Length: 126
Image 1 (cartoon, helix red, strand yellow):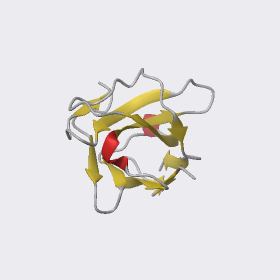
Image 2: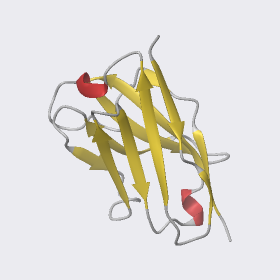
Image 3: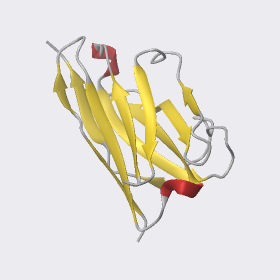
Image 4: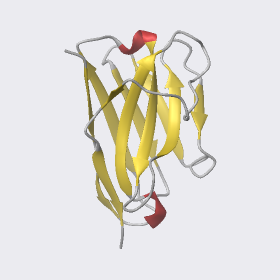
């Protein structure tokens, strides 16, 4: 059974850091594109970052450029999201989505993704 599970969320003060992880089971991420998305209360889901597992290339939403880094670890079959300088507006449920992908460029954050995790809550508050 194909499954992705997010972890690493929590409560952090403004300016703090968190590292989220998306772990895949039942399949290899090597032939997939992976995207991180977030949804704040009362708002639509928005794309944060994506990566091509094969090519390693990445994309970022303008709102997180310079603060967030996406990376993949083939050996662990995971994709991580390192988030620094977090602000209250980064609060939300963070989801990992995956889709079959063999191109070196990262998939667009507006693309359709086929498999989703249950999400992990990130709260930035003092």
